[in-house]
Amino acid sequence: MAQLNNVLDILKLLDKSNCKKCGEATCLAFAATVHKGEKRLQSCPKLANDVVDRFSDEVQERRSPDQDAVEAMARLKNQIAEMDLEAAARRVGGKFSNNRLKVKILGKDFSVDSEGNLFSDIHINSWVAGPFLNYVLHAKGTAPSGDWIPFRELHGGKEWQGLFGQQCEKPIKNLADRYSGLFEDILNIFSGKQVDRHYSSDISLVLYPLPKVPVLICYWKPEDGMDSDLTIFFDVTMEENLTIESIYTLCTGMAKMFEKIVQSHG
Ligand code: SF4
Image (cartoon, rainbow, N blue to C red; front, side, top):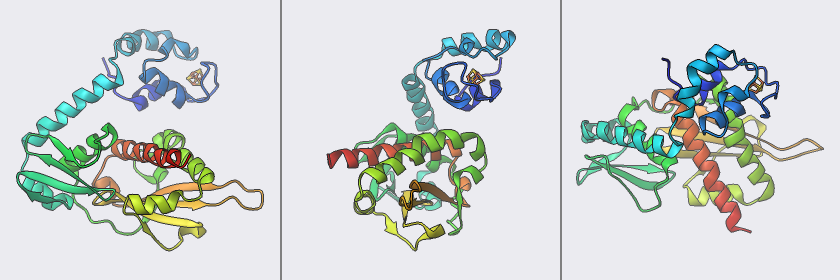
C-alpha cells in the first residue's frame, strides 16, 4: 500500500477544489488536520469510497507527530554516526574540532558529534535539529549565488506555497505590522544583515539559518490604503543544500521565534 508520509501525500488524494465541505478553508488545510490526526479522511465528501477504504486505516493508525519526529531524529543520528564529519564540515561551511562539527545557525553555535548528539548554547528546538542534520548529511555545499527567487519557484514550491504562506510569511508580516522594531531586533539577535532594498521593499534583510542557506526577507509597509506585504526569498542554489521540507520547517521555526520577540515587548 502506498504510504501517507506527510501533508502533501494526503493532499494528492484530494481533488483540490477548496470547496470547504469538510469544514476547512482549503484542501491543504484539511490535509494538515488529517496529518495531525484531528480529522478523518472520510470528512471529505468528495473522496471516493475506495480511496477512503484504502488509506483510512493508515491515517487512523498514524502515531502522533511527536512520535514520528522522535523516530525521524533517531534515523538521522544513525546516518550521522556513519559519516566522516570532518569532510562534512568542509563541505557544509562548518568547522571540525574535538570530534564535533560546528556551524552557525542564525548566528548561534550548533554542533553535532560523531554519534549524532547535538549541542548548543541555546535551546535546541525540533524545527532546527532536523533541518540541521539533513543539511550536514545531504548539502552539496554549493556556494550561494546572490540571485533570489520566491518560495513558489523552488522545486515543489507550488505545492507547499499555501502552507508556507500561512505558517511563515503571513505570521511574520502580521508581527511586523504589530511591532515596528521587529526587524531591528532580528538583526541584532540573529546576526542578520540589512541589504539594499530589493523589489522596492521598505526593509530587506538577510539571515543565515544555515551557513550556505541564506534567506532574504522583504517587507513592504502599508501605504495609501494598501495592506502591508512580506515575501521570503531564497538563493537559487538553495535546493542543492537543503530540501524544501527542511526549508519549510526552518522558516516556520523562525516565525515562532519572531513571535517570542514580539511577545517580550508586550
Ligand atoms: S471537502 Fe474535500 S475537496 Fe472540499 S475543501 Fe475539503 S478536502 Fe477539499
